[in-house]
Amino acid sequence: MSSNVLAAGAVPAGARASRPVRWHIGVLLAPALLIYTAVMVIPLAETLRLAFFRLAGDRQEYAGLANFMRLFGEGNWSQQFWNALLNNSYFFLMHLLIMVPLAIVLAALLSLPRMRASGFYRTALFMPTLLSFVVVGFVWKLILSPLWGVAPSLLDLVGLKSLFAPYLGREASALTTLGFISIWQYVGMPMMLSYAAMLSIPNEIIEAAEIDGVVGIAQFLQIKLPLLWPTIGMISILTFVANFNSFDLIYTAQGALAGPNYSTDILGTLLYRTFFGAQLQLGDPNMGATIATMMLLIILGIVCAFLFFVQRKLTRYQL
Image (cartoon, rainbow, N blue to C red; front, side, top):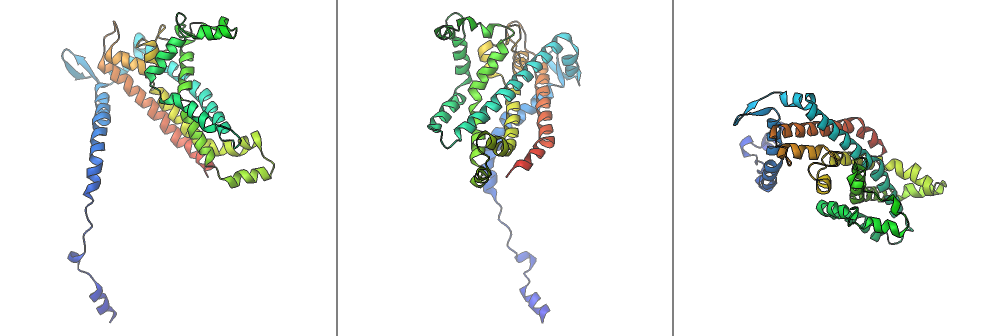
């Protein structure tokens, strides 16, 4: 009898309702996918292709790794590349060692319950992030100008005019000055990320710490800071990617030659100058693509190493 029941309840394979095709998903994703392919995938593939070719007369011919050997082997190319890489590393370390701790301290102060007008301070600190890099570079260049800038007059008002110098015109201080300008502009982003992470800490943990007598700076160092490590790791890697893709501020303030004497030259400005040319230097798309490929490999390698060896250890601090 049971077999009859099963036979009666069985539905023929052909009578089963087929699952509807969700064609609307493809329709909704198609515009974004086409735009992403047009502005990201195709240029990236073309850049990688150009890195393995060179111009022979009026046509491109396959060159293998010749462009990379030229980049690291020839004195002029090698000197420019390593100079830009060292400057880029210094630029990143400034942000990592100054901007990230400063952002965490500001977030900790703004998250205090007794802080008055915290919303105003958050807005004021975040506002420079919304400014155009052209505006930031041009305004700070005017402020620090020794001819018509307001910095000498402001320092003179407090009796510190002797400290003023043409910071953007000296090789020893130009990149450091641009680093501080960049920190001023972008400190609001890691501050808001850290602030949001602090607000997400459950009140039960804070109350338990207060019952145990852990308050003030000790509470921040022993309770809040360890719980912020995953956020700090994310901020650090985002800072690295952003700094190694930097171009706009240096170009606006110092031009394509990244003066004085290439002291502010980073990988982004070297790529632009090589690919498109600048003043008496002719553009070389193949060598520019080679530099872009090296930038991609550096960023990809560091990000993968961070995700596999660092981020995994930081996840143990997540709630």
